[in-house]
Image (cartoon, rainbow, N blue to C red; front, top):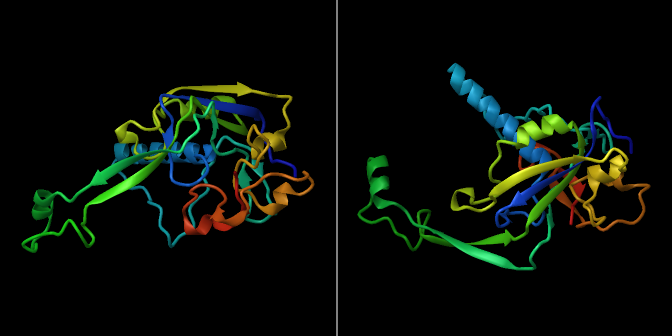
Length: 244
C-alpha cells in the first residue's frame, strides 16, 4: 500500500506529556487526525465569529467536508475508503488499571423555571429525562500519549500547540497536556508509522485492504466505525479493522 505523501512530509512521532492521564469513551485512544481536524474547525468558527458571518455546522443528513490536514493519505481500498496517515493515541508508561472515577449531575430547578413557560409542580430527579445521574468515567493514567504519523512537522506542531487538554471531562481537569513534542524519523517505515502502535498492534481504524501483504497482525477485530474525522458522523462509518 503506497501512501500519498506531499512535499515536506516525513514520518513523525508525536508525544504529549500528560499531567495525569486522559478520559475517553471508546476502547482505544484519541485520534491524531481528529485532534488536528477539531483545531482547524475551531479556527474556522473563530474566524467566522470575528467576521460576523455564519459557519456551516455538521449535520447527520449531509456528507461532511474533508478538511485539508497536514498529513499524508493512505488510499485504503480505493474510492472514498481512504484515511489519514496517523494513529490513535498509545499510552506510554501506563499505570495498570482499571481506573474509574464518577461524575454526577442533577437538574437545576431554578434554571428550568427560567427557561420554561410552564413547569409541573415538581421535576422528578428519580425518573424521566431530567433525573439525577451518577456515571462512571474510565481513565487511562499514563505519563505520555504517543501518536505516529506521516506529515508536515511544522504544520502539525502549529495546530497542536494551542491544545491544552484532550479527551472527556476537560473542565474537571482530565486530559491536561503539559507539553507537546514532535520528532522526525526519516528512516522509519512510512506504512508502519501510518498504521501501527509502537508495540506492533494496529493503531487506527483501517480497511482490511491496508493490512494485506503485511503478515499477521494483532487487531481489535472488525466492526463498524469511522475511517476519518469526524469519526462519529454516520457518513464516515464503514466496515473496518479496529485498533487494539
